[in-house]
Every structure is written in C-alpha cells, then in structure tokens.
Amino acid sequence: MRYMHRDIEHKRILVTGGAGFLGTHLCERLLQDGHDVICIDNFFTGTRRNIEHLLEDRRFEMLRHDVTFPLYVEVDAIYNLASPASPLYYQLDPVQTTKTNVVGAVNMLGLAKRLKIPILQASTSEVYGDPAVHPQPETYWGNVNPIGPRSCYDEGKRCAETLFFDYHRQHNVSIKVARIFNTYGPYMRMDDGRVVSNFICQALLDRDITIYGNGSQTRSFCFVSDLIDGLCRLMASDRAVTGPMNIGNPVEFSILELAEKIIALTNSRSRILHLDLPVDDPRQRKPDISAAQSELGWQPKVDLSDGLERTAQYFERLLIERRVALAN
Ligand code: NAD
Ligand code: UDP
Ligand code: UDP
Image (cartoon, rainbow, N blue to C red; front, side, top):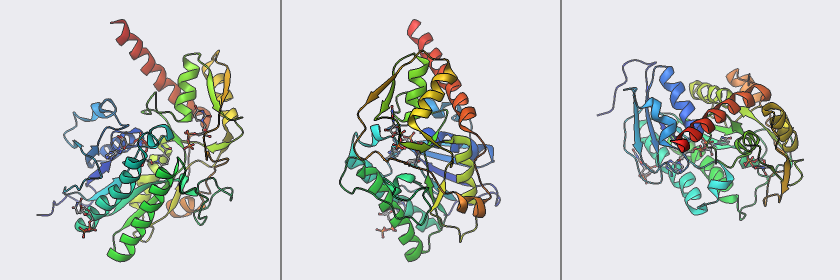
C-alpha cells in the first residue's frame, strides 16, 4: 500500500547521493523543515562521517545502495543527487559515471512515475560545456565535446536531462531540473579535487597552490546554503515550473583571483605553482539567474569572502582533528 504522510507539509523525502557534499546539507535542511529523509548512497565520494550526526534522528534513514540498480521504496518526493561531481573522481571510472547519471536517472524516474511524485534532478552548468555564450542563459544549448575525458559527466548529465523531459512529456512525471553552478562549503572532502577545497587545504598547510594553466579561466562560486535554498524553492514551486533552471552565484572570478583571495584570507605562506590545464577545461562560466530570480524569488546572499571564511574554518577543524588522531 502507498505510504501516507501525516499531513501535507510533512513528507518522506528520498535524497540520492545524500552522504555527499550537497546531499548532507540537503538532508540537514529537510530534517530541519520537519520532513522524514531516506538517504541513499554507495559511498563512492560521500562518507559515513558526513551524515553520522544525522543517524541519531529517528526521522533519518540511511541505505547503502547504488542508483544504477532499481529501488523500491515509498516516498513523497525525490532529490536525485547521486553522481560524483569532481573531475578527479568522475574520471576515475568514466563508464560508471555515465551509468550513474543515465541508468540512475531511469531508475529514479521509474520510481517517480510509479508513485506519481515530483523528482528534482541535480544537473550542472557542465551541460554548457566550454560556453561560447557568456553569461549562460538556460536557452543556450552548450558546446560539449562528446568524446573527451569530461564527456562521461557532461553527456551523462545531458542525457539525464533528456530523460527527465521525456518522462515529463510521455508519462506526465512532475520534474524539476536544476543546473547547478560551482558550489563550495563545509562537508566537501579534503581530497575532493575541486578548486576551492584544494586551494583552502593547500593554503592552510602552507603548500603550493596548484593553478591549472595561467589561472585566467573563470568560475562563479556559490556558497552551499544559498544553493540548497534554491533547490528547495525549486522543488516547492508550481508544477508548471520544470526548469531547466540555473542555480548559482553570478559573481565571476578568475582562478588566479581565487587563489590570491584564499592566500590572503588564511594568511598563508603558500606560493603559486602553475600546472598543465586539463583537456577541455571550460574557459569561462557565469550563470544568468534571471529565471530563478523571477520564478523562485531566489538569489544568493553569501558573498565569496564570507563563504570562503566559513569553509576555511571547517577545513581548519578537520585538519586539527586529523592531527589529534595521528598523535594518539
Ligand atoms: P559529491 O561527490 O560530494 O556527492 C555525490 C554523492 O553521490 C556522493 O555521496 C557519492 O557517494 C554518491 N554517488 C555517486 N555515485 C553513486 C551511485 N551510483 N549510487 C549512489 N550514490 C552515488 O558531489 P556534490 O558536489 O555533493 O554533488 C551532488 C550532485 O550535484 C551531483 O549530482 C553533481 O553532479 C551535482 N552538481 C554539483 C555541483 C557542485 O558544485 N557541487 C555543481 C553541479 C552539479
Ligand atoms: N524502477 C525502480 N523503482 C520503481 C519503479 C521503477 O527502480 O519503483 C526502475 C525499474 O528498474 C525500471 C526503471 O525504473 O527499469 C524505469 O521504469 P519505467 O516504469 O519507466 O520502465 P519499465 O519498467 O517499463 O521498463
Ligand atoms: N583548478 C585549479 N587547481 C586545482 C583544481 C582546479 O586551477 O587544484 C581549476 C580547474 O582547472 C578549473 C577550475 O579550477 O579551471 C574549477 O575546477 P573544478 O574542478 O573545481 O570545477 P569545474 O572545472 O568542474 O568547474
């Protein structure tokens, strides 16, 4: 029998990839909002440590499960976040990355179709590839290499978007597609490999800051609390609002500027080391967020300096804990 929630506000919500960076914040937020949460994760990049503090809450349930396999649970809504997001990790097993994004989307859409429930997809600014239009509006179709080392992720996410829109048109599934731009904050792994966690950890340890290429490429960085708020607003929006919708912070920085900001913030003695630019690394990226502003009344609140400081405090604590553990 179909699970019945107690009232309209109180829901049982499935978060795939719930032990990862964004997933942990989302589970926290949904519990705070009074919902029950089922978190599923195969712990490829996510960790038990991230969600340990949630296990005491009886409204929180954790299942070790890989989204490429079918899943039969009874829930009221799905946030589909399962997929490695850092180039370092999604390129470790590219076939699994495509499967996670494509087969995982089919399974979660099949679940949403059976239960007639809304499903939100964590898509990405990577669907725009190395963009020739700047900033990127949702109407831009992108510039993506289909056969390069980033394609498993970019094309996997593009195919997932196709599946979402076809399940919507063909099977009337209620969908929400968020195109997430570079997001950072606590609960990222120290060895995640993405730029903010790399630079902060390098700076705190006074190690060389590894800039790939000359550092003139740009990104626009969103603090995680803003991003999660955007996802929750999108899920709560009218059924007609399907997206795709850009969710990100439109303030753009070069990677060199980011490095300099982090060195100054942490008072670090680190020096800058230039390494090779990875193949197909996008030259520029900045979201046009007018759709999120007008349809969700959403825009980011936390600026980069503030967000970096909060993230640096998190990694400082992690490093201290690690030192203590090593000393014992
Ligand atoms: P993350 O790597 O920290 O989290 C991803 C989670 O998915 C991990 O817990 C991982 O173990 C889990 N996972 C991976 N494959 C799985 C599988 N087959 N079955 C079950 N679980 C699986 O990354 P994140 O930054 O938290 O990203 C979360 C989602 O948001 C991803 O879908 C990512 O593509 C998307 N996204 C993130 C960003 C960002 O800047 N953080 C930007 C664009 C899109
Ligand atoms: N599926 C699932 N949980 C469900 C319903 C479906 O994991 O509660 C999976 C199932 O493995 C199926 C996929 O979702 O292969 C797509 O489901 P759909 O009903 O669209 O396709 P079909 O079952 O007809 O192939
Ligand atoms: N980058 C860098 N040094 C690092 C990690 C990343 O210069 O140690 C660069 C990377 O080449 C890219 C940008 O920072 O131009 C953002 O990289 P990230 O992997 O964080 O995200 P994405 O490329 O997926 O936007």
